[in-house]
Amino acid sequence: MSMLTGALARQAAEIVRQAGKLLTEPDAVQTIIPKSRTDFVTNVDLFVQERIRGRLNRLAPDVQFLGEEGEKAAIDPGRPFWILDPVDGTTNLIHRFGHSAVSLALAEHGQVCFGVVYQPYSGECFTAFRGKGAFLNGRPIRVSGAARLEESLLSAGTVPGRRDLADRAFRQMRSLYDRCQDIRRAGCASLDLCWVACGRLEGYVELALQPWDYAAGLLLVEEAGGEVTAPDGGPLSLTEGGAVLASNRLLHPALIETLKQ
Ligand code: IPD
Ligand code: CA
Ligand code: CA
Image (cartoon, rainbow, N blue to C red; front, side, top):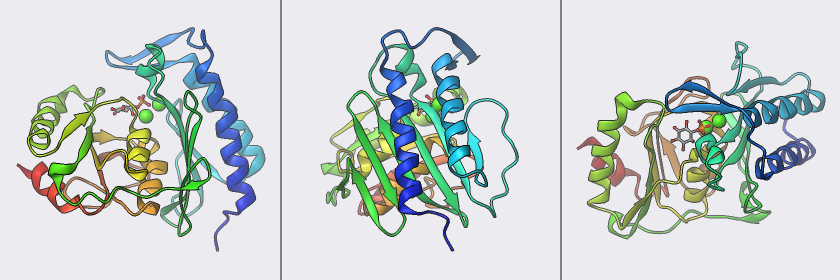
C-alpha cells in the first residue's frame, strides 16, 4: 500500500514552488557560511529547508524527513521519508547565476515514488510519479532518442566538495568529450537529471553526490524512459550518497564503457 495520493503530491509540489520563489529575491543571500573551502550554506538554504520541513510535517506528520542542512535524524528505510535539497546549486545562488532548484522526493518501500524539482528562475517545475510518468509544468516529457554517443550532449559534474576526486572527474570528462558533441557544467545536479529526463541532455555523470541531489531527479529520468545507476551500472542508495550516471538508456552501455577507461 502506498501513502502517496494525488492530493499529497499536489500539495507537496505547491509547498516546494512557494518556498522556491524565495531564491529569486534580489537580496535573498545575506549570510554565507563555509562548510569547507568549496562548499557553502546560506541563510536561504536554512530558511527554505525549515519552511518546507514545517509544512510537510503538518501535511503528513508520520513521514520521516531527510534534508541536506543541519542535524540528520536516523532514517528507518522501511517507513516513508521525504528527501529534500532546499537549494541545489548554492554556489550558483551565491553568484546570482540563476540556475538553482529545490528538489524534493518521497521514498517508500526502498524506492522513490514521487519527485519534484522546481527551478524558480525559469518557472520550470518537473514532477514524476512512479509508474505514471514524468512531467514538465504538467506536460509529459521523454528522454532523447539519440542512439550514438557521437550525437550526444552530456553534463559532467566537477564534484566541487570532493577535490580529491577532481583528477578522476576531469579525466573522465576528457574521455567523454572525445566521443560526444560537447559537455556542459551548469552546477545543479537535480536539474542535470531533469534535463536528461526532458531530452536536453543525453547523459550526466558526477562522482560524488548525496541522495538529496539525485532522489527526485532519478525518478524523473526513469519515468521519462531513461536510466540512473552508479557509473559501473550498480544500484544507488537513497540513504547513502555515491557516484551517479544518468542517461537516455540507449547510451547507458556506451557511457559505462567510456567511464571505465
Ligand atoms: C551541488 C550541486 C552541484 C554538484 C555538487 C552538489 P549543492 O549541490 O548539485 O552541481 O556538482 O556535487 O553538491 O551543494 O549546491 O546543494
Ligand atoms: Ca545539492
Ligand atoms: Ca543544497
